Image 1 (cartoon, rainbow, N blue to C red):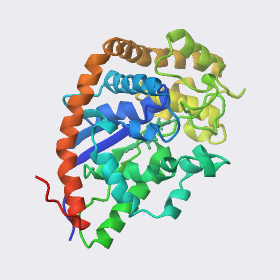
Image 2 (cartoon, helix red, strand yellow):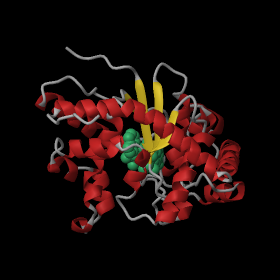
Image 3 (tube, rainbow, N blue to C red):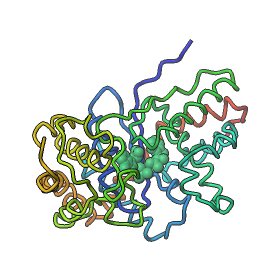
Length: 340
Ligand code: AMP
Ligand code: TRP
């Protein structure tokens, strides 16, 4: 027998530096698209995740507000959706501790994001960086979320979330946590670096030329696209012809995601042309989509008190959903709940 759970979407983004075009196409844009559907939408700036690597406190505050502004500029409506920062809802940290006792150490060492971020000197990584996926499972399961929109890089963490839910349900003989579905959809689930088609576009890449930031102005965007690494061949008539050309494939995918077309539709127009023609066209679409978002972010950031108010309101709404689920989890695990 399986409990039916109300459809609920949850996702989060770390405020660990400026957001990129990858975050926008792989996550933010899609967050807005899920609003107003059958599922309730809950979106979170995950500040507790960000501190698994060192963050300057003043910078963290600014980045948290900037991430919240990016959500809203990309179309997330804080009335239609619940929008908040993670640390204002204690349920996340409480649930993470409970899940630390369910998850196994071996599961954590297998996570590729841990291996990437910890690097060679993993003994020196914070304990939080290792435990990070248990906190992510807590984020999701403390709302009984049924679906989580993310980019491709988060797939492994979502599988682990299901493992934690299944082990909890099994160990305590309940059918309490749902098996959350990953929503990894569209042509831009993995936007690659502009300098290296084998690496994902990331806010932590040391080269700023490797990414388009949501704060870049039109000239900077055009310049980065002009300098993006490509090859000397003309464009083929369909995506099949780009299988062994990762940089070219990436640029066509970015174009398609921005214009709302498929890669094949884009290539049908550019077949036989070189990057001398394609790059300016790409820059034009990129600027036309991103400029209004950048402008909106700047406007929102000019009123930090209003952003804080929105996050606080969202946290109260989030708390109302999360609190009963954490309490019930503790009860299932055998903890006395007698406080009035
Ligand atoms: P992060 O910046 O790591 O907190 O990621 C926030 C969200 O953006 C997650 O859903 C990621 O999967 C997504 N994301 C980050 N980088 C990319 C990228 N290069 N392409 C597609 N999605 C991405
Ligand atoms: N781990 C995600 C990332 O690095 C961010 C995140 C934290 C998240 N908690 C989440 C995403 C819950 C989806 C659901 O991108």
